[in-house]
Image 1: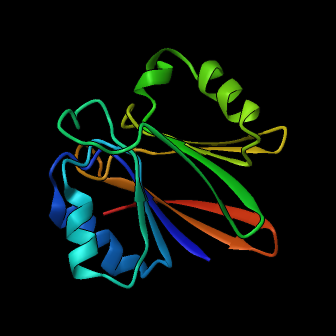
Image 2 (image 1 turned 180 degrees about the vertical axis):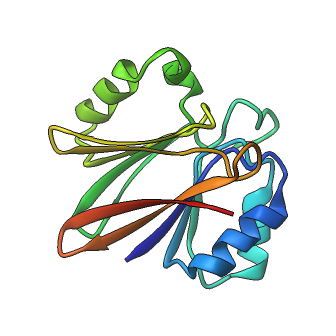
Length: 153
């Protein structure tokens, strides 16, 4: 399964749609600060499932702050990151992901890419698709393993 992970699009629907067109994913995950940008994916690519959480700039959104789900053999925990103070460190969000039994932790908010595997927990921040260097992550789930690659538009 190929999963496109993006965050912090901040209204840049063109960047969001370009990434989907380029990657042809099986699923899209948006980690907040999207301000309705996910609706553009749902309109242009109705066959692709989209999951999202709200970020600190999504004040009028009724979306979830966090989401937990399983894809294949992997348990995902996704959030924007602001509620876990990720700009000051990752220990709080990592502890939360571990308590939830996650195999994969995805968050945004910092606009900086990050990837690490810590005691079996994959920790990934795709950066910002809408600002700065316009980055996103592509996850490939194969045979119970996860591969992560960062891409620039």
